[in-house]
Length: 463
Ligand SMILES: Cc1ncc(COP(=O)(O)O)c(C=O)c1O
Image 1 (cartoon, rainbow, N blue to C red):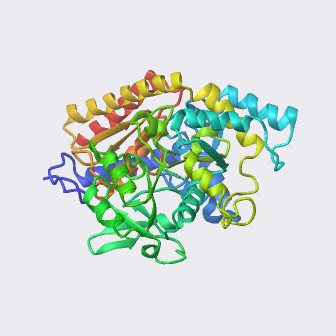
Image 2 (cartoon, protein in one colour):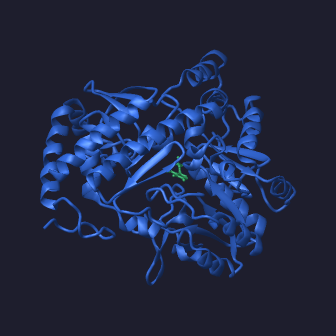
Image 3 (tube, rainbow, N blue to C red):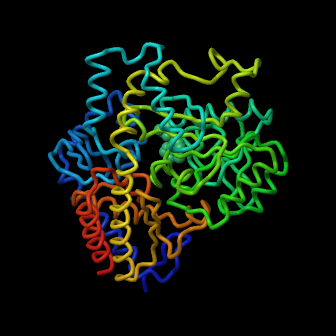
């Protein structure tokens, strides 16, 4: 009898844990053997870098050490051992425009090199162009820039509290919106709880935040009825605990309930931008009060943005008690800098265009169909969910309805096996989950290459 696998999984899975452990061990050895220069670079890096890496998340890669980057272009990346990869991780969305697209290269070279002046505390004319394009895509009338999506969310939350005079926000269980203090909370059987591993929380997040499961309108109504929630901060589809899509009518219910209870609605489109040129907001005709985003919009150069409705913008600008031009807690020295704004313009004008999304989504359709074919033909009780140019497989037979269900389907061993198997054969997925993202440079052949390696991984597991 095969062993049962992690919680959330049916018992009758057609492979054994012993077989999986054997394959992981083999793939770890192959990873070591294929990447000696990366292994050596990592061994040397521990002297001064916290955790041996420039940013501690980079420890998340499977195999015991990260690959060291040599070069990247379009949908391809080369490590310092000379191995080439089809990159579906794309910097966990930061490189959704593809690596170093030529239009962004030219804009960066021009701004930083020819014209000069990356950071001056002075505006450039690119900024109005970018804001107008974000309005065209996402709807909100007025925009301000940040350096990260985390900051876009932080500042949007501050503005929402100021505008409503309410202390709390509401988020979804197992959401991720960046390192925003208020968001590290989950729904647990005994009630809301700080998320496991929450580092140095300033206060118990239950003091600042209400939390509900996605796709549960009744719970949302119950929590908003306290009338102390300044804003619901949400991804229109969850993307950081697998992909969890909204059920028909759910997002309409969110909008009705937030209006009814006087809470603002913030759509965080940082990842759901994959749904189309204006993210889910435009694709699904949503009407948030505020949109936040980051990562992809400047072709990999740090940039984020938040947009407000005209009414909210008027109110905050005329609020004498809100200092938004100095030390009131909204803004940053390098935010809106000339280099980021030039890169945003080039990315939006020439790379992540409306037409590009058509191509990216077509490649994602092919990727998803390829994975689905492997799952069906092998009888694997897993599922794949697609959101425009992004797709992710999950180890449960039906798409999860909410963050809690999706978290229960996590399986670290399967993750490690599949990531290592793929990376050892030249395919890179995002390390935090089984996410694949398509850039304008991704091709149908890339999708087919993934399907072939994924099929081989499944066959070895089932052998
Ligand atoms: C939906 C969402 N919002 C915000 C962020 C924060 O982005 P950053 O780490 O670039 O600030 C993330 C990061 O993964 C995200 O997935």
